[in-house]
Image (cartoon, rainbow, N blue to C red):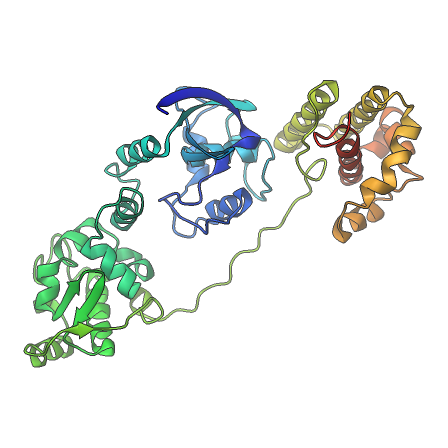
Length: 415
């Protein structure tokens, strides 16, 4: 296929696990990718900055590039924008992100749907030489996706882990003027296919490479200082090793990321930040049959999103509007099933509750959401504004309502 513009639902779009910006395990979910992007430990994503730059509305002229993997539309280009859209529409769980700063996104957006080859060409053209990719990411992309031979820079990384362990090495001048074959040869290091060879022992080779890393970090070697004088700037101990082994035969050495010294000194790795999960209205996105019930469900999600983004400027009883909307939603669903509200809810309550894990059941219990109380809690929205303004209880009610609607109106439910 060539290229065509197609309108796709945000909830259907799948984030690309092999994004050169920050690749992740291919089995990772959208939530895993979003968590990684928000942690942004290597400053690759800058989502708050992008949200600010996008202005107040989504620009339809900037189309995500999408490739269908079977039936899954995978976003090859535009992942950051799609992440912001998924955050805005509560399709992923986040904590502490200013959703008010994200521009308005429609539920469906036009995408450039194309073949994988065209998508990769487009991605490379847009990012390879614009500064959004560092040299190592560019080399990995060219080898993995464009089938080009590995560069000495990439072979050095795969053999030692030195570059990823020391981000200050991931720059163009290091690739082109230091980790190139003629300079490495002067240091007693060479490449044979994908293998790293050295005239020195593994520990001595590691010592030399760490010495180079330290000199670059401390700017004793830079584009302005000692340019082209790698050997001459090394510590006397490194120079002595290189000189003593000049006539030795190079052999394969075993180095890896575990041996690489990060930033010139070993540092303990911090534990991964555990993101606190917030309760999402209805517990998670619902996938309902097309119709009035589905439309009203989406409106309530948008109403809750508006509340979340603007609650500091809204009155304390605004949550009662959401409680009333939940009752209206249940009445519409009951009418569809030709039942009164009481029978519609109570005939499905226990089955819906049985689909929940213990944490969710505890949430219901803590907020007194039971089969006996659920009808009264829905009626409260219309008759007792102060009681229905309890947002925690409203969210708990929405969770059981969501499970009931999935049973009665879910896409997999019988009509």
